[in-house]
Image 1 (cartoon, rainbow, N blue to C red):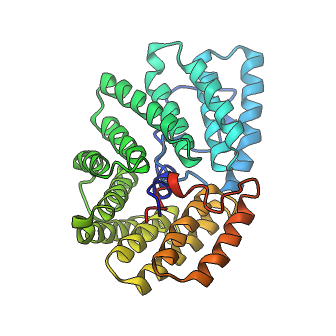
Image 2: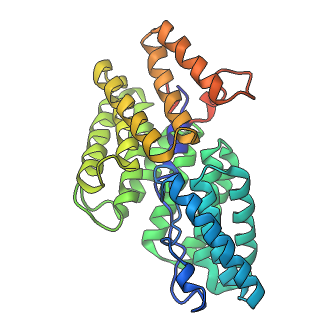
Length: 336
């Protein structure tokens, strides 16, 4: 596998909040039916694609009303950010990028909007990472880290450090990714289990560390311990069948495959893929990325018949690509 698949799916785990406060005019509040946008890691997703498809026309209507009534730029930018996040959850890359760019243009005009600007740019970085545009993701997330250091919120700084570590992992800089995620974990991860406000961010840090250590020959056992901790956190904190549990299972399966436990590794990977299909939708790129992780496992196990069957499935998912494994070099799940 190559490192990047796992990381790209990590981006789905966290959305940094675009703060609601007194943002919307009272006439628009009844239309705000969905929760606020969160700046996201590739390991969290705010909603099911079906839920996103319901929110998209609501936010489009809000924009129509807001533009017609002269809503200030910062408020319009906020709604564009919510719309962009919904397009991202619906796996509509082009419309999500366009909406994020609209939001950033509108939110970039006032210093008071810097937190929302950072969250929106963070989410755009997540989208870039999800679709394999890793250098653009790294650039965006480094900009966000600079902004958050200027704003001074330690939790948001740690969140950005974690997000940067995801992109570094996708670029195969394993030691740097491990160090960045551990630095973030010092702030984000006070517990191993039980709900707390930063559980999503803690989980993403643990998953990043596990993948990064799994790619270092002397740290494979450490990777397994961290992946087991991530799985305990996901199981003890999040609802059954959640996207968080799916990603934790993929990380655990990867670590087990690196520690010569192929039966356990395959069982957990297949369960993770099943949950990802159920949660994110079968056509979502996060499912394709997880299949590439499983492909690496099959290749390592020299299961050529199964590998050929999976390659046919992957080729069918990406009919434009000539290379049967186009994302192997840019996917965190494809770490082998």
